[in-house]
Length: 239
Length: 109
Image 1 (cartoon, helix red, strand yellow):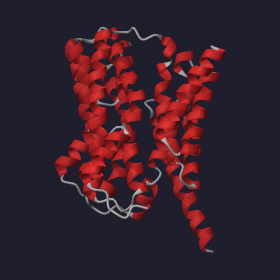
Image 2 (cartoon, helix red, strand yellow):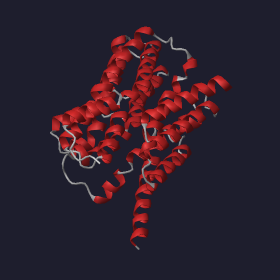
Image 3 (spheres, helix red, strand yellow):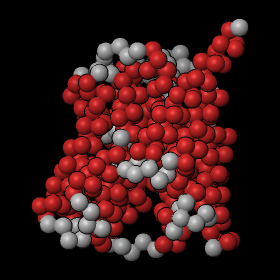
Image 4 (tube, helix red, strand yellow):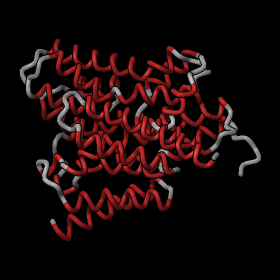
């Protein structure tokens, strides 16, 4: 147990260090996006604008794939944004923790709200209920200060080097491994585990629903099942 | 692709702006207002409800094998999950996943 509350400065460095393992994922993913972007016919500034303005790998790949197929602009935007809809849920999940920060800070944090910064920060906040608002802000800042530069720089390297990364590296699977690694430590209770299994089953069942809406539906069902399981367990213990 | 430069920029900026608004939605609008209890109960499960569902199709139908179930990728996923739960550590899960992936690709590939 921690007797001394975490100072914002040490929280920053903790967040900074906690992101190191994600280099294994973010670097190849950024390289890949840069390379694929160049190959698809984007110039360097367009590829970079994607990674800087959007800063969400899976939706960038979605947009690129649809653009290569000359899909209508409206469909490109709608589908890629649907891939990012999950971030509205991330945004909501962080409100109880950092919702009292000034508006400008919340706007900056929103820009850097990606899967990795979200999952690491939420894990940290829930493991340490005594964390102050300043320490929570420090931790989140640490996570994105470490990881975001790598995303930008390696997109550039990928765009310059081009599509020369051999398929043998199986980098296609870096993303699934990343998400599994992020979610495994979240299985801290039976309801969490039940929610995860529900999410997997319904995501697979709904895979043919267009625009990633299947995932959103599966997530909503999984949240309800998780919350209901938790309530049910509480009642059983109480009675 | 045959899109004009203007269309490409429109998509990039539109996607950037839209993504920001999605991320800012709750943090920006709700701020420090109290959220209802039932809503908070469900929020507890956001991460475990989204992330496994996001990757499940990628594991079962990998793009690299044109959607055919692939033993090395499935084993790597299971290894990452098991190590992540056992060691309660992200780095252990990432390393276990990659080691098993490369080992299995080398053995079966």
